[in-house]
Image 1: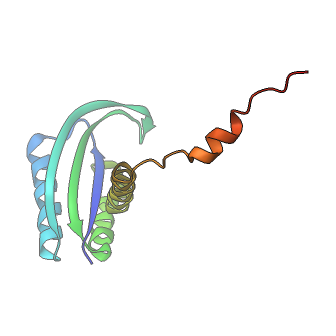
Image 2: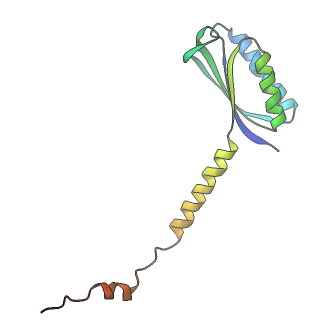
Length: 134
């Protein structure tokens, strides 16, 4: 079953551009070779990390959006784990969030289509009884 994933990984800040491209193309070919597709690759550039990871304060961030079965994602994560220039990576399944947002949107549209219930005229009349005078 194809699912949508976001894969963010951080490589060493001193990694040359050619090696970055080679790593990205290797990951893309492994995903497509195993039956998945890479939707988007966004190179976010060099950024400062919140804390030191493997003695690096900065890193080059790369975000990949892919559609693939779970076993393909596990293989990509294994490759990232053994690749020395990769400092850190994280994979998030996005399709569950998309399903939840679609469900909330459908509920809101259903509520907007349903008219508001009118107040019962008898209930309003019984509340407005005149006060008794003595």
